[in-house]
Amino acid sequence: MSRAFCQKCAYPQSACVCSSVKTVKVKTEVIVLQHPSEVEHAKNTVKLLCLTLPETQVVVGETAEDFAELQVYLQQASKPVYLVYPSETSQRASESNSPEDCIILLIDGTWRKAFKMLQLNPWLLDLPALHIEFEGVSQYRIRKAKRSDSLSTLEATAYMLQAINPTLDIAPMFAAFDAMVQHKLDAMPPAVRARYDQEQ
Image (cartoon, rainbow, N blue to C red; front, side, top):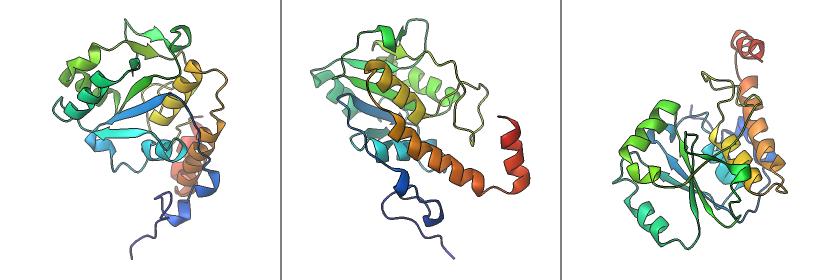
């Protein structure tokens, strides 16, 4: 028997997050470059990001050809464009004086896949890069990461937006995120749930 899905949030009705979704308005244009393997991933947070930040653009691909139209769009843009990716040359977002009315690009994929996408898209490396200083622990408890400070795409976007605009209230973004995480945890068998709880 097929599962029933909520027509609004697209999650299974048993895990509907609509009651926790509140949209956020920002001047910053958010564009996500999503690796194809992430599109159908049940734990991916881009779907949540689009619910809380409806103007988010998602471009699925891996090669430069996949992002050809996006490159043209960015070249014609009349505002600054930044790549959100930590590197030796990236600048701390809170110290960059980046205007709110800018475009930020985020790569949605594992570290390995994100690195590969960068190698296949050298044009991304020509963009000024920003990173956030995050010293806490990701709340993305349901997806394994080698580093405790590895952030989901939603978390990275929220913290980046707040770094650009310190007065921005990003709590609504995390309300939906926390609801999704809790639904996933509640659906786990007790033995599996215990393993995740022990790691906190």
